[in-house]
Amino acid sequence: YMEAKLNHFDVARTLFAAGVKKCPRHIPTYQSWARLEMQAGNWLQAKRLISEALTLNKKDGNSWLVAAKIEEKLFNIGLVGLLLRRGIECAPNNPQLYVALAENEVQRGQIDAARELLEEGLEIDPMHA
Image (tube, rainbow, N blue to C red; front, side):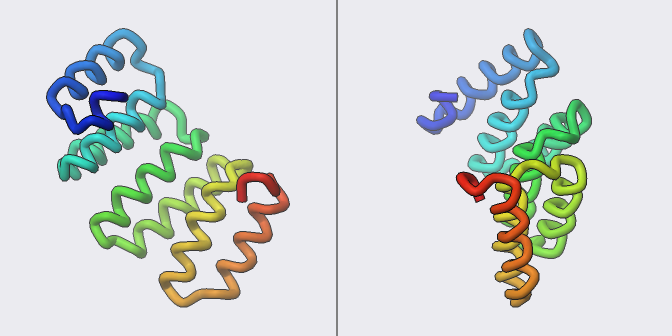
């Protein structure tokens, strides 16, 4: 993780690959590696990694957030909304998904929908919405 933060991409990739080999079901490793590839502009690799994380556990809301962020960086705003909605279906107790979808709705000019989503997120966890 630190190597990725320092933009030491090759070292970070080697460490992530070793981590996945040692613990292939550790979702945060895939998420962090996908973020690294996103930072490096390797969109297909980032998508592949986050898809693997979602295949392993679709109930992890953070994976949906990373998937949506990848599409946001690619300016696929409609797909961002679809991913976040699917994330809410799979991980309905993750308030960050509601916040992210509300932000997406604001970008699309859907202020009332955004307000409703934020209210739902607040009901789930007032400290994190």
